[in-house]
Length: 212
Image 1 (spheres, rainbow, N blue to C red):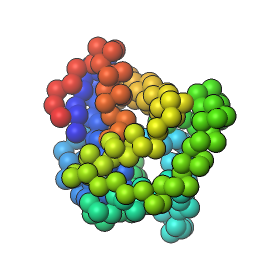
Image 2 (image 1 turned 120 degrees about the vertical axis):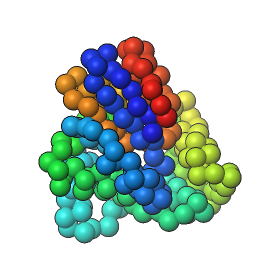
Image 3 (image 1 turned 60 degrees about the vertical axis):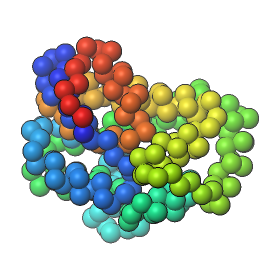
Image 4 (image 1 turned 180 degrees about the horizontal axis):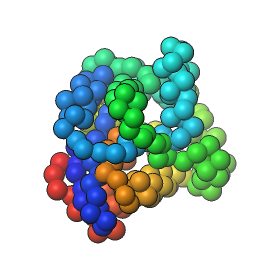
């Protein structure tokens, strides 16, 4: 976890998570009680936060895309995997019980569609579609789950347009973290793959990282 002091003097805590790995939720449970925060932030859109709340209430199974199925299949070599990510559910449950505000900091559907059209070309879209069909047969097995998450990210974003789209996500999430932190301490869960880019953007505003 990373702890930062903002340019406003508030605190931002960032828990870098390997999405879907159940053991990550155990780490979160151990540290969340030690952190003083007034706002929680998830790396999904506000629409997805609402969907997550409804999903837990109705006990429905989420629909997974082909890349998500392939990711989960490969991730299982490092431990139990669940979708939706257990860390998101732990944060949601913790904040709901304590009336702590929880927000999604990723792009909403309209913003994502606009960014997708801006960065991903038609040719890249076609290539990615063919590539995703082969993912279910792909085996990625580096020594650690952290190495796997980073290697998988490079694999799934092999085309330039998709890398630019992820960089745009990092900008959006960092701006939303900054917005939320103006008057409150923030505890944010961020996918491991996106943490480095987000931290660099937060440091550009003069934020100081105290520990990791």
